[in-house]
Image (cartoon, rainbow, N blue to C red; front, side, top):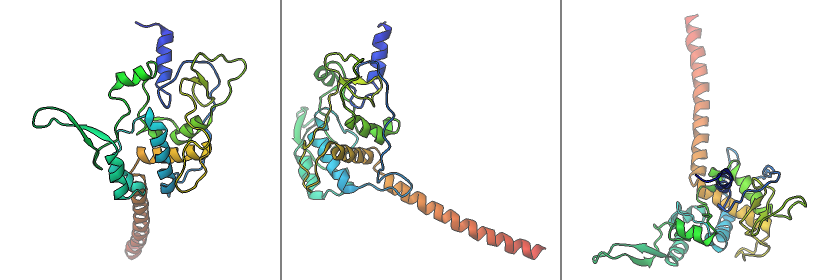
Length: 255
């Protein structure tokens, strides 16, 4: 059985956004509270922001993190056209088969295919990241407490470590991460992507956009669920008023 400090380190590692955690000491800040278009009963997905967030995911995050629960065709829900989805899917090579000869083969992706993970298997992912396995981001917003605010705070929270805190080789300080030190370097930098709509690609903007995209990825049915909830509440309100007057009318005749 491994020693206790190895167990603690492994436990902390499971909590990080990318699975890159290394145990350390330090005060953890609570996530910053942000205003999100998807919050609240009437919350909706900001589709322009979600599209920009997908660009950030594709150009930055996808090198290490998968999105395996999302199919290419699902991107039409946030405003991508059918032609754009087909072109995106075709840019990926999908392992398929077996064919008539019993062999596996590769083909161009189709809209019905799911996003291809960056590594062939978990062992390959761990080998590329010193034993840590980068988390799949499909459900990351739901998998973390106060997920949207936490992910945003983590992405924007890198800074110099306190003078009394020692960081090991390859560690980076982030006050929003439990323990303060993790092996994942700051993934975003100013102007890292070029948005087609001309939006300035600041770290704050890219963080907001990718969080919006990941919120949608974690709960694609959010808008329809909220709309259904509102309709149910309206129906119950009308039904309650109707039953109230029906009750008064019935008891009035009895008395």
